[in-house]
Amino acid sequence: MGVSFITAGMAQRESWATRTGFILAAVGSAVGLGNIWRFPYQVGEYGGAAFLVVYLLLIAFIGFPVMLVEFTIGRYTERNPVGALKQIGQGISSKIGWVFVVAGFVILSYYSVVSGWILQYIVIGLQGNYAVGGAGAQFGATTGGLPSVLTHAIFMAAVIGIVAFGIQDGIELSVKLMVPAIIALLVGLAVYAGTLSGAGDAYAYYLSPDLGAIASNWTEILPAAAAQAFFTLSLGMGVMITYASYLGEDRNLAKDGVIIVSLDTLIAFTAGLVAFPVLFTANLTETTDGPGFIFVSLSEAFSSIPFGGILGAVFFATVAIAALSSAISIMEVVVSYLIDEHGLGRVPAVMALGIAIFLVGVPVAYDQSSSLVWLTVYDGLANQILLILGGLLLALYVGWFATDLGLEELNKGFRNLGSWGMVWIWTLRVPVIVLLLVVLWYNATGVYGSLTGIFG
Image 1 (cartoon, rainbow, N blue to C red):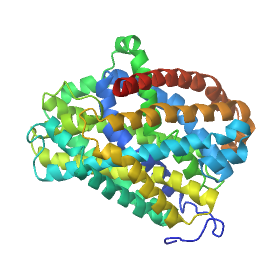
Image 2 (tube, rainbow, N blue to C red; image 1 turned 90 degrees about the horizontal axis):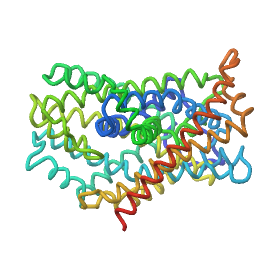
Image 3 (cartoon, rainbow, N blue to C red; image 1 turned 30 degrees about the horizontal axis):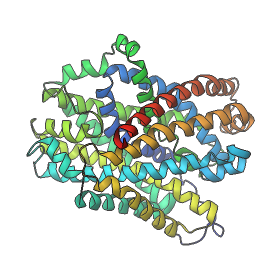
């Protein structure tokens, strides 16, 4: 297909070349920093296996139904999130798509910064220099100033380059290489981690849930697990709406969704099988919470285990590939908006948005404060609020107002959807909406508290 400078009004809309390409692209979107950077530190911060159990339940009963909502809207309208909701919605519901585009724009601006830090840690590992001068000090030197801005620019340049080549020649071709590489590298790392001396204790922590801990800490675990489920499945930012908009009508959306959710969850689970044996072997059971988890705790652990430099470099390279596969999907959301709604050619759209996203991310990249103020602000607003809000609004819309549209579109590719369709609708109407309302309330309260603490 090549790089297209033709405007959207003059060119036929792109599509996936193969079903495998779509599935791998969706998996690649879901398998990003959410799985390998964010998932292990969420598990460590919220009680190990207790968090894992809640997370898996939310993936199955909340994440999957919402993913089907995004699939049905995307394929039905063949538009980006803004255009899709403008086409089928009325009044305020026609504006819902903006939540997704804004969320994706903000998330990619700091996602690229964190991915740039990962690039630096690949180099540090190859030099055998993890935790030299102290892991915390090393992370602090990585996360601010001009080097951080430079690696942010390098990563965004890679994202721009891939998305500029379009759906088949850019995104689909790249994910067919990246997703199998991610799986192979993670499995290899997990096998090696299983041979380490701390693996037994790590597995007990990771795989043996304390139900009492869930009951006593559910107000903390539930919102965190819900936000993680949405982040890791790329929900609430319009990726699945956009990717499904390039699909044909003969695809079984539920079957594809099961494959995507299963692969994504298995990869996140495998990331934990890598991280925790490394930490327990290095006797680092008290780990750094939040974004510094893999950079501080894991890099310190890599510095004290056999072949730690090489192992760490391979681990961070895996994270970088996963981050790239996810970043290109988020970029496609905002790019498709300019192409569909304003008739802009793909290359000008990618360049304009890539530069804008880079500039918005510069405060995060340059921030030299120890508390990573701008990352906290961006992540709180986008991940804790906008992702959940987007999923909630779509569940409300399809569950109560566009039921026929959702059922009709989901039935395509099925021989007979039968009563399963109404099971899906009522899942959206009650448990999904109620839970997302609760999570949104807790997240909004938490974000308000964080912002008040930062800005007074």
